[in-house]
Image 1 (cartoon, rainbow over the protein chains, first blue to last red):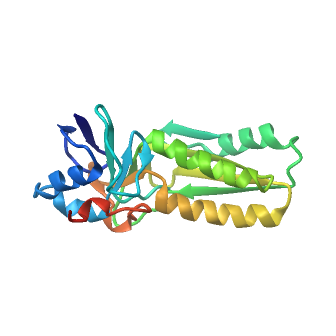
Image 2 (cartoon, chains in turn green, yellow):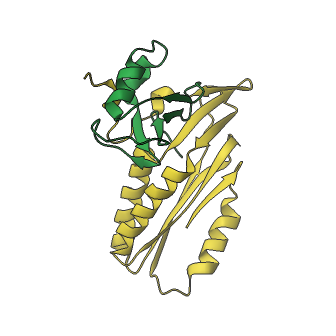
Length: 73
Length: 148
């Protein structure tokens, strides 16, 4: 099981799912009408390291963080 | 040297402290940037969420980059509410020479805007509203929209 956490303005509790790669997470989130409008603007981190490929493998206990568009300062 | 502070920053105290701590380190240039919340569109304040683990990684990679030019970065940012005309962000570059410091403060503040994991909200009549239009997707955003 992996945990998906939603950072910043996405009002959504953490979700725990079975997933072996980020592609599995993408497939899961694309089915959720509340979350799908966010997907093209989210950056992704696995255990606090930014990810650059959907092929990134996931292991039991991993935490996938979703980061919406940012604006510091 | 990254500091996260609840509520507004005190530029007078922070800049004085940074100056006191650095002026004997033989840097020839100290270039600070102070961000001040502007009164605009009826806002009372801005409010910030920060994801600190990734902010720290981002800042550390910048520190390493500027270290290779003999320079050093310092940064302070608010979390929570910061009222109009208060400060929410201070960054500074210290460098042996002015040219590197001027270039680095420009590049650092621009990349900060685009890639530091900080979310901004307008506070209007006590309500916190995500500043979506002013926000930028981080580098590499959009992976999850790709179809299998």
